[in-house]
Amino acid sequence: MSNESLEHNRLLLELNRAIQNVNREIINPLIPELTVDGLVPVMSMVARARGSYLKTLFTVTESAGEAMPTAEDTARLREKRESYEELLAAAKALEVAIERGYLDVSR
Image (spheres, rainbow, N blue to C red):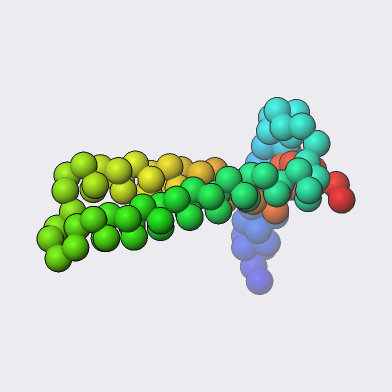
């Protein structure tokens, strides 16, 4: 590996460390200390939103029968999807923050 490549890799490592430190300094104080048990309500909320979205799909399917769903049914389904997707995105952001060491999780 050339000196230029080594220098480039070293700079990338430093940048990654700086990003991790900045994120940890900003994010960690905002969130109370996390525990695995404390994360269960967050994951449960995402699961409930997923379940509600899927249940609404079956409700809309049943009420529509052979016809297309009404605009109201589609709007209700969209609202459920948007809620689920937003909660899922937030849960994934939380997971990434934990994986990258921005947040502490105790047992």
